[in-house]
Image (cartoon, rainbow, N blue to C red):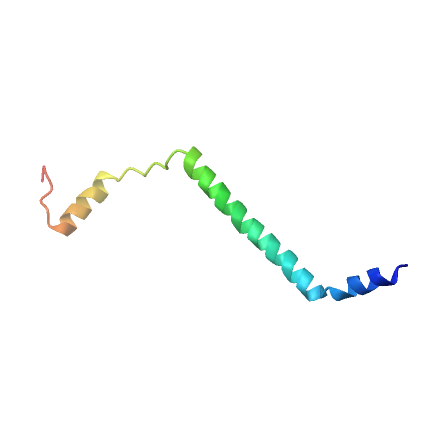
Amino acid sequence: MDQESVVEAKGFNPGLIVLLVVGGLLITFLVGNYVLYMYAQKTLPPRKKKPVSKKKLKREKLKQGVAVPGE
């Protein structure tokens, strides 16, 4: 075995390698999520809001002090 290759292999700090791998995976995950989010914003239609019931609408108007029509 070549003596130089052994010295070079020992030069790397194992902790640094683990940190770089974990950091790389985390960055990849975050960037991937962002790209998917941007893609979904462009392609998916906006979500439809639930229709508000007449009962709820009446209650809200009473709270605000507005006279409800037909009452």
